[in-house]
Length: 243
Image 1 (tube, helix red, strand yellow):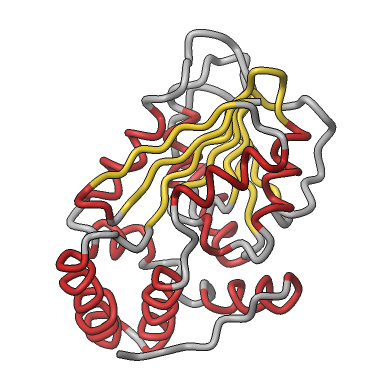
Image 2 (tube, one colour; image 1 turned 90 degrees about the horizontal axis):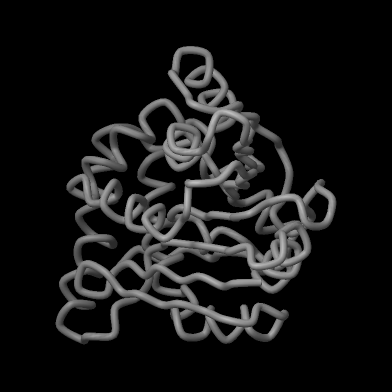
């Protein structure tokens, strides 16, 4: 089992994650689909199914990466709405902006480089805040949740879908073999950068907060209602909180 020391302090982890997702941006979308057997689309769309797109609104997509969730949102939000994708990685945002210029979107879309722990937006700006397969990457989740609560409108929702450690022991043994052994080996066939990134993925899943703990943290910072839904034998969880 390949282990990796992952920083926990905000500044160190922010730098660490930025490096981890540099030099993998060009292949990111294709390899994510391949390595999840295209289930990543299923998980993201399940998260989007919790959203009401019948009204004009603004949506913030945190840790947006190359914009996989962001662009899906922009195809569903009404034309007078707005979708903002936010990420710390310059490399990922370069790819997202390139995709923006050649994509057909239904509403305006903007990309912002910033940290989820320090959102550069006014209070009560967004109807929804989403995170797609990236909640593990934040160093201070409580700060992210507090900032999310601040920028949400009343009755707005925070929604996240992410990899977690499954509770079933047999599923975890099979899953850990795949993420610790198979994925890094596949990554090495592409580049040394992907070996590094996929080793981080495996370790971040092993250290991930349980979905129940995430819901408790949302309630702790002031969300008044939470949802939790496990998917694909418990290897992915959808969690949400309502302001």
